[in-house]
Length: 422
Image (cartoon, rainbow, N blue to C red; front, side, top):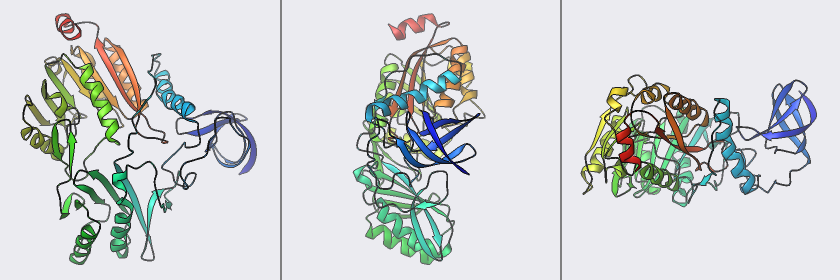
């Protein structure tokens, strides 16, 4: 380890300052582009010691835990520069995939804040420590507040602490996932294993005292006081335990509005990696939808919500592992539009089948710039052109960005394309 004086050249993909030291790049958390800093360097990673010359774009952080808690990468960058950096994450990923494409300005989709959060609990001599992980570490930072959470999650941390205290004697690492719903807080416990009778009784009491809507452990019901429901368009959906939702309500609504706009003339839509139906339940208002996902619980919840919502057209939910058995090009040819929103790893195999298909409109949604760029390159090679790439920021201050892109087929099914595009 050595202390070096460094000039920060740019802000990297993880929100770290990037400097050059001889022949190697050095990554300095919490340093900003254009700053001169001293840093303790070990290999390619460094610890910021002092800011010798601050960037004019530097502002005060909004959270007292910033630079200790690893949840936020960038809080000290002025809003305009921050928006440019978030957009650059997509541009850089595309460039690294050999693509030069226009990227729209970033859309602020933070809204009221994040509606889901996972706290980590670790135990030492029977005492629980609850909070977030420190950056590049498994150390727990015990937080008092988190300014990026929605107000509906105000009771999440006290509830998590109470639950962790009950389970502290077993000493096993515990993750406590909390989602804000219309019925209140929905809590899923992971990592602790099966509960005994004494623990179950204590958790039931905690669920009552903290007014939890539901408490589950590894998907198994512990307490149910109210249905944990969310609105998706005109549908009301009861969440299965541990269900995936977009990080913010504003993010889901913004993405859904763009998906609906891009598929406005489609009468028959495939929704791939559909989850609980954030897009499918809205699309079914005007189109026939076949929705695919590997999560049987999510599909069942979506079907139940569709059945209880009057006025929807046909919405079929199909259990299928699209990584090992993607929809083939021939299967996709029957659709006017295809929407796909895979996990962070992307969907290379499915993208390859879409590329070989004649679907005239494809809408890609992604939370990972690198896998999106790879899948986009596959579609472009297959004859699609990009009509829109829009980054959305629902992960404020984190080094993550949501992406929505619209692709149009430039060959095949010309009559269908004319019908859909006008």
